[in-house]
View 1 (spheres, rainbow, N blue to C red):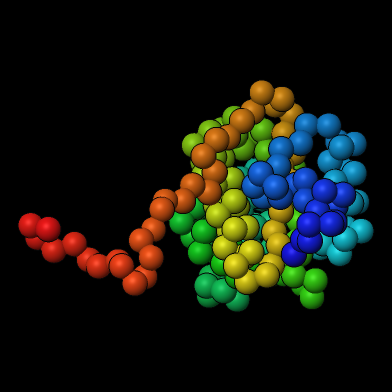
View 2 (view 1 turned 90 degrees about the vertical axis):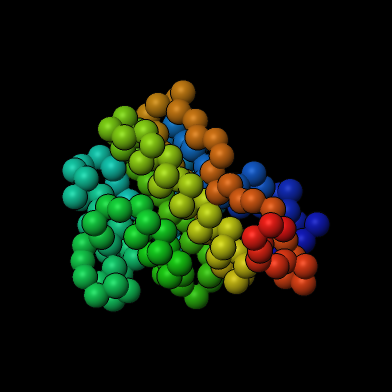
Length: 171
């Protein structure tokens, strides 16, 4: 994906080096990030939180081709289902995509835990897609300069497959 020589100068390096979810307040800085990613061949998709929750759900349903994936539409808004839907994120030929979520502060102000869960799913999905050579970066626009979300995409240490064994009673 990156070589030692080019990583520091590429705009996507700066957006991915500390995780795939990036917060933006300034519209001009967000516009620059979008343009930089487009110039690198990233496909851009946008979801708006500025309307109703049903509009938000419908936009995600359309983006993820919900009915094709699951046989019903629209997405119900349940985060477990979104986590499943993100497995088949619709990458184009470049296998690079930027998901822009606009007006995230509206979602976060209604339900902070739900908003955090959404970002957690995006971070985890981005990491999972990297395993298959696909890059997903999330550009999250918020009017709330004080917003922060820690612990996104948290993983635990796993035992390697040669040493792992199920625990037996009294072990």
